[in-house]
Image 1 (cartoon, helix red, strand yellow):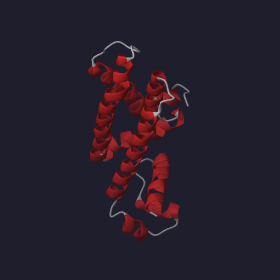
Image 2 (cartoon, helix red, strand yellow):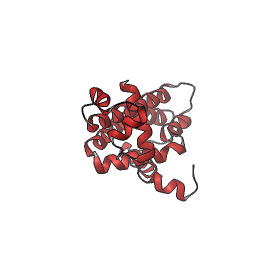
Image 3 (tube, rainbow, N blue to C red):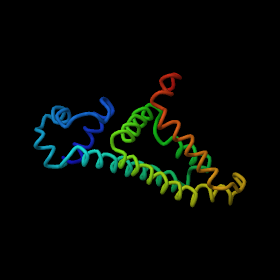
Image 4 (cartoon, one colour):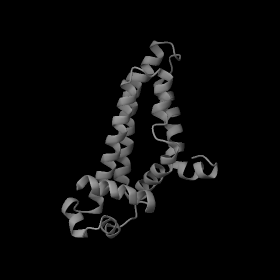
Length: 168
């Protein structure tokens, strides 16, 4: 039931943003609010579980790509940069924007994950690229700035940029 609550709450976030209410969620699931509060003591606890679930999924996708020996280095970098289909970027972008405004501690959790992921990326993909002469030795801080710039623009502004430019 806990996973179902998280899943349906995620659907509501896609539709209504993070301002959905527990009443909205209870109605969507055809359960009482009391039932929801048996699993999550507050909406904040539910939002935290949604973020944790999202980060776990992202981490699993990242590791699968990094460990896939069939992918070339270029394919790994491309796959890691565009890990979600473009049609999902606007939903993720909206979630991150809402977290920034209403749940900054959860947004900070996302940023901590990004920093940990970056360390993994440098330790594997970029080191492999330098060792195989795929690209020249570059200061990892510069690569991090470039990577973060690309993902920031997609995730933080994607919900405006993508529709304005007919990108789906």
